[in-house]
Amino acid sequence: MKLSKILSSYRSEFIAKIKKNTNNNTNKKDFNPIRLDFGSVVFLLARYFGFCYGVENAIEIAYRTVTENPTKRIFLLSEMIHNPLVNQELLKKNVQFIFDSDGQQKISWNELTSGDIIIIPAFGTSIEIEKKIIEKGIDIQRYNTTCPFVQKVWKRGVSLGDDNFTVMIHGKHQHEETKATFSRIKNNTPSFVVRDINEVKIISRIILGKLGKDEFYKIFEGKYSEGFDVNTDLDRIGVVNQTTMLSSETQAIANELKNAMIEKYGIENLHEHFADTRDTLCYATNNNQKATEALLTQNADIAIVVGGYNSSNTTHLVEMLEEKFITYFIDSAEKILSKDQIKHFDIHQKIEKVTNNFVLLDSKPTIILTSGASCPDSEVENVISKILSFLPFKKEFDDVLTDFV
Ligand code: SF4
Image 1 (tube, rainbow, N blue to C red):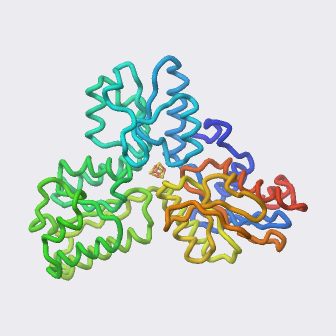
Image 2: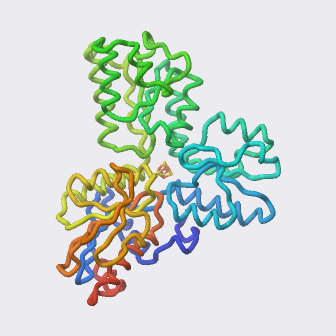
Image 3: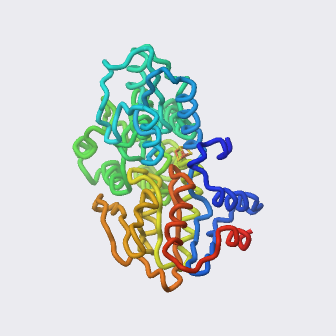
């Protein structure tokens, strides 16, 4: 599916030309940043960023649904994707959200009828919610935008269960995608959700008898399948991930569990106790994170990441860049309030704050710029334009493009 099919307001001709040029690069392993020198400011643009296949697909289906059904009530189970700009546009078209992003139900099932349409978002949904929709007499397949890369994780989890492995799901327990994955696996096989490496270290200690088994039920309350038996269900484990987790942590988690199994059962028996299925991150997460790793080899004055504040993949890009750069996480160009002020999201305090003198624009700064998989390219261009608007002398977009090409 081409970006040209997506609503024109999400497109950026400038970014599209850059991406087209980088896509033509025969060296697929090239994650080097794209240098855009506007004369008085340099942007180092991540090699890969922005809308992924799953998001484009979901937006396309959602807008087609609106166009094809002018007289019907149209609901989205929850946010279409984790981007406020895209969600606001859908709300303007009278699409209503049944759940908010915290999982709170805003519209009760009683209010829905068989004449309504429900769009399933790119994250997918749980079996329990699918059943509710079917009970209402509403078709769950016709307007289902679940990303195929999410479905791949579900299949991997089910297949691990078929091979009698317990499934450890690495993800954010309250995230729609992880809820959907857990619901599909937990009825077939013992399973549980871990958030990070610290929680996997707890699992390792339980496996190795360094921590009481009953601790599992306390620490992972609400995050394990019904009837989970810690005496037997931690003997044979395979791992799947929420598709947008941090790649480095995913590998660390798999290694931690693998080492615990080697210590307990011996390397010769590893395959009986550990299934190495760590790589269920999607291609977009992998590409965007590798491109961000390449940004970390550069020198820059600041980094700006654009995307929804509740977007998992975008937050991970912020975490990575924060290791080296002063990083500002904004959800739109409007958050650059002036030449000196930026309103940005602090992922640690979970608040938006205003920072003064965020960059010295008079000294030809170098600014790293990237965005999450749910951020329209038009917003990345808007950020560039906004910063350029504060500068008296700068090259035109076309000239920069010519230099770049
Ligand atoms: S981030 Fe990956 S899994 Fe999520 S919608 Fe995009 S391609 Fe699909």
